[in-house]
Figure 1: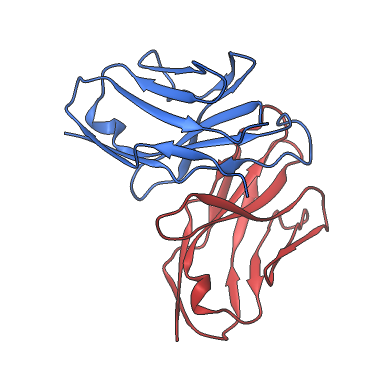
Figure 2: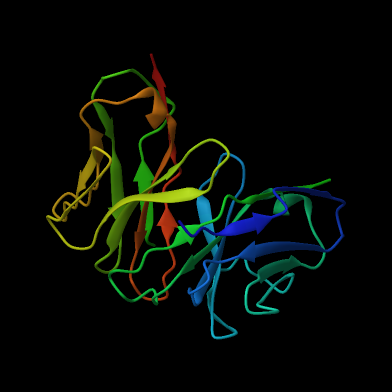
Length: 117
Length: 112
């Protein structure tokens, strides 16, 4: 069964450093998402992406964050200058239909656990 | 704002016990409702969904009914197994941009 993959599974970085989290969505999917879960808190929406553009972003997704689809298979989340509070599990998701379609289902990757020291 | 509230965990049950995990929601529109499950070391997997009132989603013995009058989508299973041990997330989307809004997750531990 096709699945969403994410790399790395764990990343430790120093505050102020840039990190890039990578995702390979399911191959025929066109709609992509990032979510995060700070330890002990809810899974929170960060951003949705379609046709090389951000469709929607949350208040969390400030100028420190960016997303990119650099080629036909990868979808990346970059944090330019990490803060302690960016420590979280980051999930990528993809779907083959837009969010306004009732049948839309998002398929999630296993997550990247980011620890900022 | 739109939100989802789940019962606090962890929930610990014996094998073959009946499971209920409560989920209620607040939404400005007419949401679709989901249960996702996260097994240890894995990503979120869709367990079941319902897109309109009175719909029942079901999968792997789990069921949940979309109750508009009580704004609820409680997850039930008649007889849990050890392999059901996981974290369960209730979520909604307002079917606009696709953004999912999650509850805080409920950890289920099933003992033999």
